[in-house]
Every structure is written in structure tokens, then in C-alpha cells.
Amino acid sequence: MRHVTPAADPDHRKLRLTFVSAVFSLVAVFAAVGSTIPLFNIYRAEDGFSNAGISLTVVAYSAATLGTLLVLGRLSNHVGRRPTAIAGLALLVLGCLVLLNVHHIGVLIAGRLLMGLGAGLASSSLPAYIVDAAPRRPVWLAAVASSQTVMLGLAVGAVASGALVQFGPWPRELIYVVVVALLVLSAVLVAISSETVTPAPGGWRSLRPSVRVPVRVRRLLPVAAAVLLPTWATGSFYQAFVPALVQDQLHTDSPLVLGLTFAAYMAPSAVGAPLGGRFSPAAAQSIGMLGFLAGWVGMLTGIITGALPLFVAATIVAGAAQGIAISAVTRGLLHGSGLTERASIFAVVYLLSYSGATVPSLISAQLSSVFSVPHIAAGYGAFALVATLFTVIAARDPHPDTADLPGESLDLAR
Image (cartoon, rainbow, N blue to C red; front, side, top):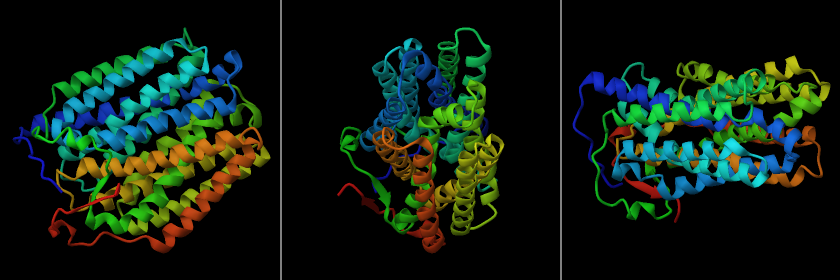
């Protein structure tokens, strides 16, 4: 793998500011992404959007993120973390401005597509920025902060949006104004933070669609996929179908309840992640996926019986369990990584993640006119079962001496 020159070491206070700024910015990015979810039922009720249409907006967002990761996933290695992150934040601001006036499904898709482009840039640059600037202790902090800040941001955005939609003025617009302010503040914080890599030539060549990962992590990728695909597929299920499920099956139309239900899946992920740090990556992946499967069993039972408390409780279990599994995957892939490899590793992590969000959503959108939401939920539960079985059988720890291996890379696009 080509070497990227690290920037000159800043003082510790500036490095702490960089870490905090990167974490805050990643929260803001995914708060923007999560802010749309409690509005889906309003769009359904007032503008006549269908479940299939809403699901297609999830596909548009995820597909835009995937495309950006494929083309621009390594760009921050060449132009720097700061400019790449600021460009992503700017695209998210533009997406929020488009969503200020949604009365047609095409406008919603366009706004979410812009959000996807911005989130794609942020997903490769900001997590790498976090790891670059993270303190050395505790050892799990870098993996947890870089992987679980996403879930925290989604939860914050959904709950804040639900509260403002239900209790604030201008229910269709106010949350986007608030999010734009957070994104602008994030851009300012990133702009005054330290750059952690020195810009280097080769930026145009890096735009060739390609996914490069260190050869040493190749053996970890199948289980990484088994963890990331179903957990992020479940997140997309919550975006696309839980608004209808909460209203039609669980008999409430409260935007705040919808936001809290979505947050019940995302927020516990940040709590579960540090717990996984007590186990080896392989053990934490297996434990996490078993808990994730148990959560899906409870969620399906809650859907069948119409019991909202059971559904929410099972959602919390699944959310905490996914935090254990996802952070363990990230910890294993980052083990022994250098500054030059982190953006590429995170590009792979999010390519797998958004593939899990995109492909099942696209299939579900087509099936939603034939099958009911509970039947579609059962399909996601079956996906979780297969992935859990594979993880328990195949999970492996990284080689303990990977830090001493040369920085070769595997181009997955070949």
C-alpha cells in the first residue's frame, strides 16, 4: 500500500481538539441523516407517499453513499482529512436545504441522495480522523468512537426530530434548520483542528473505483460482512418500514414515539460497544450476533402480538448487541493498522455496511406491494439468523503479530 505522510505532530491540546471535533462532526453528520425518519409518516399522511416510495429514498441515500465510498473513499489520504470532511459537511447542508420543502417524492429522494454523497465523504474521512487523533488509552476508544458515533448520531437526530415535529413550530422545517446549524458548527471545528496527514500527490488516481485493504485483514472480511450486512439492513428496515409499523401495527402515530423507537435500536449500540472491549474480537462478534438474533426474535414476537413495550425492549437488546459486534469487527480490522491504511479500511467497513442497507431495502421496496410489513420483518429476521450462525462458526481473531507485517494491500475491485 502506498505510504501517506503523517502531518507534523501537533501539541496534545490541539490533538484533543481534533479528536473532539471529529467525533462531534460525525455525530452531526448522522444526526442529519436520522432527522428525516420521524417525518416519514407526515409525508405519508399529508403527501401520499407510499411505503415503497419511502423505501426507495433509503435506497437512494445508501446507493449515493456507496458510490461516493467507491470513488472517493481514499481521497482523504491525498488531500487531507480536513478538506474531505468539510466537503462532506457542505453536501449534507445542501441536502437539508432541499428537504426544507418536501411535497413530492422526487424532492425527498434528491435531498436524501445529497445526504448520501455527504455521508459517503464523511464516512471515509471522519472515522479515520478520529482514529488518527484518538488518545492511546483506553485501547478500545478509537474503535468504539469511530464505529459507534454513527449510531449515536442517528439516535440523536431521530429523537430530536421526533420531539420538534410533535411539539415545536414548523414541524416539517425546524429540524433541518437545527441540523444545518450543527453541520456549520462542525465545519468550523474541523477547520480549526489539526490536519493529521500531509497532502500528497496521487489524488486523481485515487478516484479510480477501487477498494484496497491490507492483505492481513482479508481473512477477517467474511465475518465482518456477516456482522455488518444484517445489522445495517436492520437499520434500513427501521428507516423504511418502522414508521408504518409503529402507526399501523403498534397503533401510535406520535413522531416522538417513532423517533424514540428508532433511537432504541441505535443508541444502545454505543453502550454495548465498550462491553465488547472486554472480550477478544472473535468472541465479541459471536456474543454480539447471538444477542442481535435474540433481539430479532423479541421484535418479531412484539410485531405479531402488537405489544409495543416488548418490541421496544427487544429493539434495545438488538441495538446493544450490534454495538458489541460492530465495534469488535472494527477493532479486528484496525489491529496493527497504520495511518496510511485507515481511510481504506473504513471505506470497506462502510461499503459493507451500506450494501447491507441498500440491497435488502431495494428488494423490500419491490416486495412491499405484495407482502405485509410483518412478513418483510420476518425476512430480515431470517437474514439475522443465517448471519449469526456463520459468525459463530467462522469468527477469528486478528493475528497477534499483524503490526509487524508489511503494508501490502488487496484490491477488491479486481
